[in-house]
Structures are given as structure tokens and as C-alpha cells.
Image (cartoon, rainbow, N blue to C red; front, side):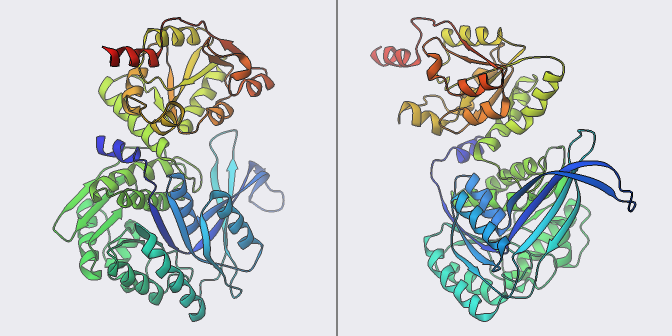
Length: 494
């Protein structure tokens, strides 16, 4: 776990090239109220529409959330859906000069209808696909090869996301794989279901799921041993360095041509939607390997990230900070056998909703808490007295450096969060990576926003927002003589 924590805190932003089938995922949300009078079907009263990047676009979007420089290669149709894809790519800062327009096909669109019933967690009811799956023509294929040859030289790693929609032709993939080999670059492919796997010949690794690996090897995968046997057969058949087979609730198996075979189990999670889990595994695996992690460390990270993804509806990007929070939360629970305090925001929000339904009030404060001292302890106790529970937003290491300078923090985030979690006044801790806690405040909507006595009300981030819905601002007493900076100066002088 220390290796994972170090990896997630690595400030370097690797450059990753993603090649594959680009799609648009559209989500129609609503209340499933009753059975229609026209037919025995559920009537969905739609109230919200959301659009996200799908396919290779989803992998690129998830890489951006993991603080990776991302370049995307693929095709879209000459249509309104394609324009929406380009707009989303621009908004996310994904380099898309090699996303080509193919007038012979529509942009692939997957439209999902998500229903809520009696305020319970939403569930996917129906998916409608709009697509053409014929292979791209030779002219576009040659253009993509030209773009790929330029980008491979600049990239730390190449990811192939093949959804069998026509972009990942045998000729294009073999061109990419051979060119990458000449430059000693890693190529990881998430293969299509069934079909001819010879187009992946020579990849560094493949990442099929249980069903895909079974189809590719002609074997039913029921046990871990079955999965390992299939993984071994894959690297043997297609001249791979390694095979990585994802097994949903059973974790991931890994087989390397040097003889290593490993099973990485996963902890039980509440599964709401498997959409995007494979993309998240691919993105986190790519990020880790691009940062020079071993296969074992990269797979551990991918296992955790994929587990977080299935707890969400649709293909939702997950940040390094959210993965780090999940790791620290479980380390804390394992070491101290106490109720979890260290939370991801997604895990915390339903808990806060339940507490509010019981009539409880929520207080929020934030800080770096680099060197926890008596002033902090008194401050947190005073903040807790303002409500029924206290949520603390903790700056991650990168945001502390931005606020305090290159020499800070003195204590890394996993040390700071452990000490903070031991304070009785603190109920929950959420690690955040933005310069200010404004996004956290907007999501949590605290009843009381607390800051220290060295702040004026007009200097408090989020004060106007909290007051706009009837919340209260509380400025705690200032405890003179306590300061992390002064402690550091005294320590240096001594």
C-alpha cells in the first residue's frame, strides 16, 4: 500500500496516447412512476439528461481525471453527436486533433435510461445503441497511422480501446504495435469480445474480462485456475509480455511470460453499475505503468479503481485523490478497528443525507493540518460543538505545496490523515485536490461553515454560498501562540 500511496502522489504527469472507438454515452434520468396505460411497460418521467464520453473517449476522460496528459486518436461521424463529442473533449482538455470526421458512419451513441423508484438508488432500465460497425476505409486508416506515428514518439505508453465499432482494424493496430516496439514503448489493449485476436499480436499486454478471455481461448472460466490458464494461453498465442484478466467480484489474474502467475482479490463492494469498470481499469493501469510502476503495483491500483467505478452509475471518472482516500480509509479501519472516518465524497454524501433525515446538523471546516498542535485540537473541538457532526476537508500534498510553498507539507497526506482521524471531535475526513474547498462545500452543503479566528468573514471561501441557502458561518476563537510555521521555525532554530 505504501507503493500505491507513493504512486498516487507522484507529481509527474505522464503522456498517454489512446487509440480506439470513440462514442457518446447519454443518460436519461427520471422517476419510474407506474406501468403505462398503453402497454405493460414502465413509464419513466424524465427529469434530467447527461452526456459523457464513451469507449476510447471514456478511457481518455478517466486518464484526465487521473492527472494525465492525454491524446486521443479515432473517428466520429459528421453529425450532431460528433459535435457533442468534440465539445466534451475540448472541455476536458483532451488533445483531439487526430479525431477524424468519417461521413460514412454516424457517431456511436449509447443512450441509457436510468430510473429511480421511491427515492431508492437509480438503476439502468434500458440501453439503445445508434451505430455502424463496418471497418474504417483505407484512406482514414492511413491518416490515423500518420497521426499515430507522430504521437507514439511523444507518449510514455499507448492504450488501445477496441469496442469492435470499426476503428481498430488489423492493419492499424499492427502498424501501431510495430512502431511502438521500435521505440520500446508499452502497448496495452482492451480487446473486443470474440473476433480475431491476431490484430493484438505483439502487444505488451491484453486486459480482457472473464467472458472475453473465455471466448478468445475457447475455455469456460469458472475458477481462478481457469482464469490463470486462459491468461497463460493468451500470452503464448499472441506473443504478449503479459495477460491481465479481470474477473469482476473475483478480482484480477495476471500471467507473465517469465512464469509469474498471480491472483489479486478484491474486497466486496456495493455494485450499482458495471458500466465503465473496464475503462477505469485500463486508465489506472496505463497511468501506473507510465509512471514506471511494476505490473503488480499497477494491477493493485487498477483493482481498487475498478472497484470504486462499479459503485457509481455510468462511466464516471475517478481522481487520484479519490483512490487515495479509499486506500487510506481501509488502512485506517484495518489498523485501528474503528468506524471509518476517512471517506471519498461519493461514500460520504449518502451518510450525511441519512444523518440529516434524523434531524442532525452538519459542520464543515478545512485545512492542511501539516503539524497538528494544541491550537488545532481546540479549534476542531469548538467546530464540532456547532453541529451534530464535523466533516474536515484535508488538502492533499499537491494543494499544500501550492498554498505553503515547495518545502511543504512536512508530513505527507497519509500521515496527516491518520493523526487527524485520531481526534475525537472529527467525524469524517475528505481529502481534496483543488486550491480551495469550494467544490466540497457545494456538494456537502454544510449547515455550519467553520473557520479560524484569523479569518474575516469576507475572506472565507464558500461563506456567501452557505448563507444563500440558510446556512451559518462560525468564526472560531483564535488561540494565540500556536502556528505550524512558528513551530517549524523554532524546530529549525533548535
